Image (tube, rainbow, N blue to C red; front, side, top):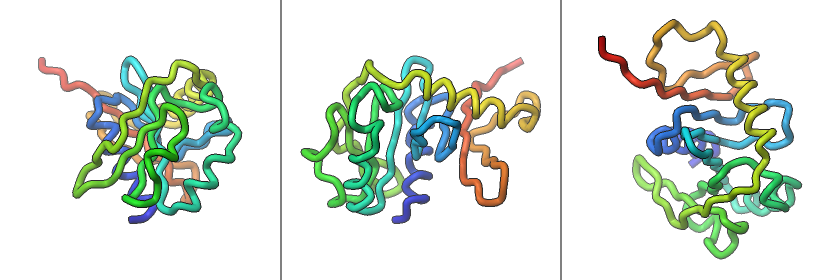
Length: 166
């Protein structure tokens, strides 16, 4: 399974967890670019997708992984195929997810992290809002909307909107 396929699974899983907004691989002027981050009304969930063991091992050396308060997400997960990451190798309070059929299986549940990069999350959300301004039709019920500034952009923004009955 490729990195992009893992990110797609992460996006779908986050929407299924009740996240109202899901952003994937979007740069925003902050150092951390989560593979997927979902914003639930009360908390955020970050998922880092690892298609290889070497990618996971190199991730440990990023400065925002060295301390809980440097990273984004009230809950943080790695999503990887079986055998790439062992549960006892996870950073403090991180959880582990694995693809399972068409869905995702929780191998180890993440613990809530109260020390986080609030500034980074707000910057990411503002960046996403600025990019979608004027593109969505009024009243659109959008689950997954892809956008980008150039042809190479892969960023995705998923917006869950409640149905209204008149």
